[in-house]
Length: 411
Image (cartoon, rainbow, N blue to C red; front, side, top):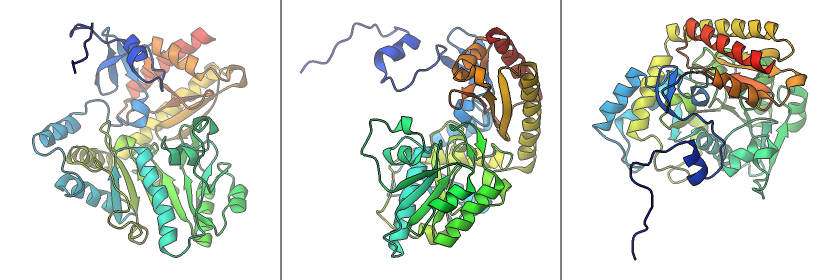
């Protein structure tokens, strides 16, 4: 058999058009192609600078190419990359020990993404019920407009039908309830429920913070019915709210917590944290992953965790949050016919568009990009702001100016 040939010379450059030619069309990326970044600054193929207020969807919380993280990765790359799950390694043990010391958890499980962390949490919840003789407890409760990942299980638990269309039949025994509705929770949670999964702040669902009363009610109902409470902190955890994890600010402790995104600052890693009692349901062979907790990812995550989990760092996040909220509120006062409520927590914030501009969030982010500002959306009606946690007051002011220029165009 002869090798396939190509008409493309080795030096043919790649462009945004290359995406349309060779990639499966599951995304519709921007026309700009980033090639270099430092901190919150990003440069495209043409050398133009942008201010990044996306952090790769709340991932690069220490900014792009943080020197300590780069140094850690370079050092580990010279030592040990991968050993498989037949062996353990020093970085993953250090990371697990540090997470346990910093949280409610006794045990950790590492994987490669938020979806995998949530998949593990959901499997654990059903396994825990079965192991304790409650085979009837299979139902899982989650919230409308939630987002928990793109595996078939997690996308089904997420309460957004648009993401499950065409993928049926879907996993059974799943119930979706209104977010922040205590009475809906009381009506839905019964003795056949093995777990309730909730985001303390719904990210993709519009940057909607849970109330303390709601999360406490879920905790009480889970206790009452023998169900596990799972907090999905993939997006809102790792310092994003000014606490290491959001549950700490609420004073409500889950049985299982999931983390990813910012945990690796861009290097893929996910984690599921839980207690000794719950973790005992997963014995050797019941769950696993080839790459999870590999030395490269674990060493990076350990540096990220040690950098973020410092009182002065988290205090600065809270200060930056107040500065950004004030800047966004000022913009909303200037353009009240476009911008409505500013909501969220820490440096995960959203602005609701007014009814007259409903469905135009993507259009506004494109205009902002033209002004050199990278933003996110949280559905078609919400602008989402998730800058690196190291964002300065000066960068917040620049971002506000660039967004103001974009809004002037659409107005």
